Amino acid sequence: MNSIDRNHIWHPYASATRPLEQFEVISAQGVYLELANGAKIIDGMSSWWSVIHGYNHPRLNAAMHAQIEKFSHVMFGGLTHAPAIKLTETLLRIVPQNLQHVFYSDSGSVAVEVAMKMALQYQVAAKKPQKRHFATIRGGYHGDTWNAMSVCDPVTGMHSLFSNSLTCQFFVSRPQSTFHGAWQESDLNEVRELFKSKHKSIAAFIIEPIVQGAGGMYFYHPQFLRGIADLCKKYNILLIADEIATGFGRSGTLFACEHAAVQPDIMCIGKALTGGYMSFAATLCSSKIAHTISENPPYVFMHGPTFMANPLACALACESINLLLETSWQANVLRIERELQHLLQALETHAAVAQVRVLGAIGVVEMHEAVDMSRIQPLFVAHGVWLRPFGKLIYTMPPYCISSEELQTVILGMIRSIEEYCV
Ligand SMILES: *Cc1c(COP(=O)(O)O)cnc(C)c1O
Image 1 (spheres, helix red, strand yellow):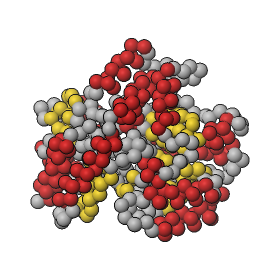
Image 2: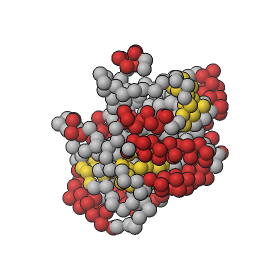
Image 3: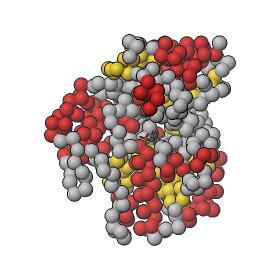
Image 4: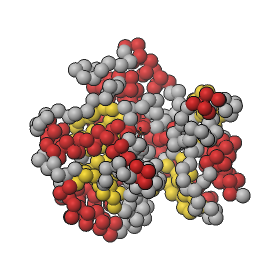
């Protein structure tokens, strides 16, 4: 392991003094990562949901090169450019129709901060300043910055560590009704009661539509989201859909809100937005919100990142979306879903496995016990696959371009590693 890396570079959710082994990547092509030790392994993680078209894609490379030759960045205060205009035009064609205004930022967590700030400023502008709290369900993940962290799951998130300084929010249980199971109306009881008693102090309800990602890899029933949307309307609470993980096809629809035919007031996108090439994100909102904020003091939305609407990222995102829409992404996601369902079945009867669940191009194996990363990760690599479990969850969300044969390698690698891990 490289000594500069080992001694000086901090990795995500890691110790500086006792880091786990890091595998050095020297090239990446299609679904393959080439490691410094010569191994070529298949990325079963799409680099955390983002690399949907695979690595080193000629069309994405060309889009970046073409924009670099023009200009890589200009400030967005007072200036605009074709990449931002084209991307916005493209996005407006595919997002829920009520979303008409786009605010660009540099990462998913920032897009969530922007969404929360927007919701608060809207309520102030709408003469409801006492609506200043957020509500959400347990088991969520919305990012690592301050306010985003305040709506992450209070147990698996960082709440215990920072609870004295985090804004206190309202949490309700996550729905029992799973995506494929029967709908139980009682899942909405807690929300109904919370809204009834506290709606005067709630600005918005923030939720990951259908798929809870890093907070637990859980797929819930679309009727729950529909019920939340109705209750939000009834009590004048804004609905924020965090589509940062689910956006751009991952769950089988372009956006997961579509499973429930719900139009959120505010929506966050990121991760796969640039096909996983660059950090980039956006917060979209309805005209009602944009107009209310803009027609009341201070008449502007008070946010403006330095790298807002970075032209390289915009050009890239535009090409990534074009590529997605031109390929048969939906057929690919459905094929991946069927193969995951079929092949992961083998684990359902394994003594160490609590549950196997699949939705779209996401396959999850929940173990009874938390896995030891230092022991299981080298097993995956030895079987030619890249997976990054957390807690009890071992999961894959491969690039959509993965072939059936490559997907088999990923799933068999997962199965064999679990078997070897458990002996
Ligand atoms: C990853 C993620 C975020 C945070 O995005 P970053 O780009 O890592 O800041 C927020 N919400 C959800 C649902 C995510 O999956």
